[in-house]
Length: 335
Image 1 (cartoon, rainbow, N blue to C red):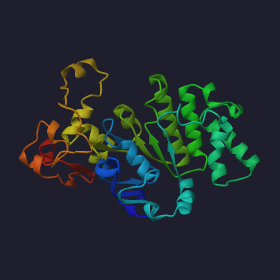
Image 2 (tube, rainbow, N blue to C red):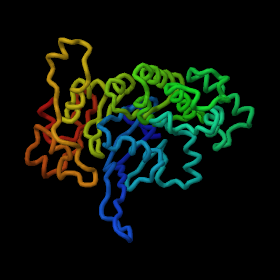
Image 3 (cartoon, rainbow, N blue to C red):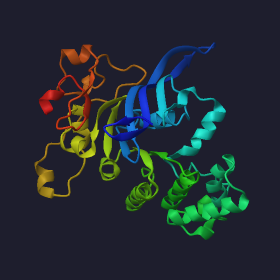
Image 4 (cartoon, one colour):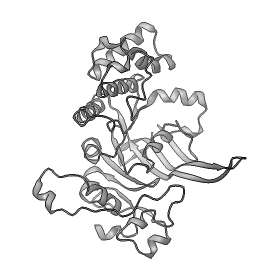
């Protein structure tokens, strides 16, 4: 594992792209491509949580799936513990999957309704050939305790549980093979508000107890601030800003980040009344036909001619040893 600033780099993503072909006609010829992820670069350090935020359709979930090789990348590399996952054979990748897992967004759709909870949580152990039947049963009961459920629920079916309980079952399944890295793909968006904080707190506790590393994908900026060490802001297939959580929330350098953060409600009614809400005009452009230059320029109040013509360089403008990456021609004016 490589090191950076004294921290071990667990996951290294470079120039990652995922383009979905658009096929038309009787002969199904390709006439274009949806650029869902288009040149994403970031590192995740051992033991940290990187939050990935942005509007719906910006490519967050696709990024998570390509990182785990659930989708084949169009271009770019994904290194996990120094191994390039994009070059591994199917058998090698299957063995590597023991160390990296996923918590899916919808706890209703991600659990097989015909399988018992015990079989759902124990399935990764069976696939990876870990332990015998008795060992697997013991491990499943232990995992149910870890996520706060009764270990005697092993013979129940998913429809017998609430949404929050189902998501806990999904968390237990992800933990089954004792992974080092977990992609949490909007794990709270389908849950009631009253349950969301419980699940986020559970993920935080598990990270501390088991030494886990997360890529936490969400559009709830308050929850991301609560659980993440660093935050990456994504817009139309690209990361436009990345830095330590408090740095991004207190000193956003990209106009899109500023607009997102202005939407977070403040508990103090006086401060809420004083602050200025940034309303973005227009809709998110189609990823099949992204704008020229900076992809955000059609909706940006600060856009100039250079924004329409040149793609902004992704550069580090951090000060006092804090790295603050941003892709904006005019980021200096916000410092």
